[in-house]
Length: 223
Image 1 (spheres, rainbow, N blue to C red):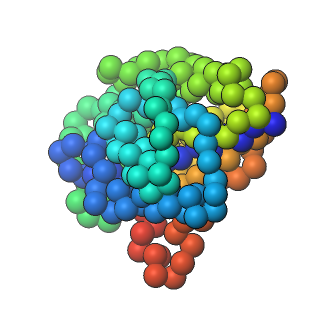
Image 2: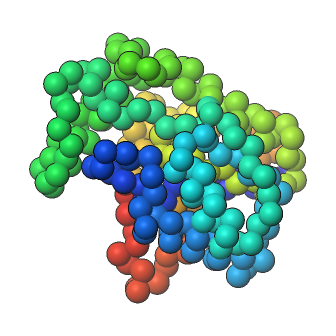
C-alpha cells in the first residue's frame, strides 16, 4: 500500500487584491510542516502540485523545512475553483471585498450558494470548467498516483476545493457534504489517503500535527 498526503496551501491573502500569494504566516506554516516531517524521519518519493503561486510557495516552504530534493509534477487539475467567479455567477453585483465579520459571513454564504448551483449545473461561472470537468482534473491526479507510485509516500499540494472533492469522491458524498468539508479545511492541513492498485481509502482529514502546541494556537487559520 502507498500513502498519499494532501496538503492545503498555507494562509493566502484573503481580502487583498491578489489572493494567490502566501502571507508571512502562510510561509511559516508550510516551513513548520516540513520541519515536523523531517524531525520524524518522514520522507517522500514524489510530489504533485497545482500550478497556482500559493501551491508553489507552500511546496517551497515544506521543501526548505524538510530538506527535500524533489522536483514536483505540476498538475493544473489540482488548481482551485475561482471563488469570485462562482459568486458573480449568482450575484453579478457582488464586487466588494469582505472587510468585517458580517462581510465575511455574507461572502461565504454566497460562495456556498454559488458552489451548490455550479455543482448542480445550473450556473456556469465565467472562465471555469464544468463541475464534472473540475472533478476529472482531481481524480486524474489520484489515478496517476495509484498507477505510478504503488508502495510510495506521495505528497499533493493543492487547495481546499480539490482536497475536499477528492475526499468526497472516494467517500461518495453528496455535493452538499463536499461543500461542508471544503468550508472547514484549515491552512497547511494534512489529509491522508492510503492506496492500492484499485482504490484510495481515507485515513485522516484536515489534521495539523505540526501546529499542535499551545504557543501556536494563533497559527491555525482557514483562508
